[in-house]
Length: 169
Figure 1: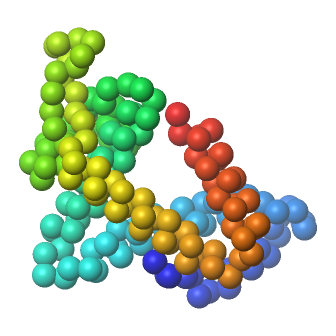
Figure 2: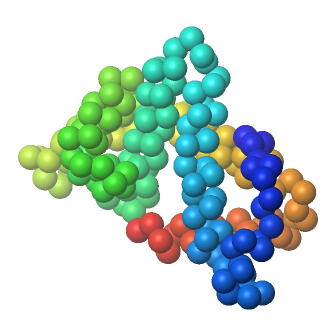
């Protein structure tokens, strides 16, 4: 949170090729590059005694976010769904799900639609971790846009939500 790139962030470099128009593509990927590792690094710096435990916690958050995303569609979540959500192969997703189950964030069970299919659900601890993760994400957004007026913050949040909803099915 609060980490900002102190290098020149003017739009000049990103818009030079297209004149004075706003060029969202390069801006989007500049943000992706900037934030892709920083959010997990911030989580890792909280407890330096056990960095492996914090890395696992970040992975648990990714898994429970994936399960919650599937469940929001009204579907049951299986390892295959987690793999698809996270862009992983089945074996990688299976290991992450196994670890989240062992940590108490997920529970395995039988599908209500197909007894041969194993599904995962958030436990109470999983719901608590998901809520804490979303609270942290909101605090990050609030800090990063603190200098903006409320209308701009709300409009940007609306566009981000729309972009995520339309991009990630």
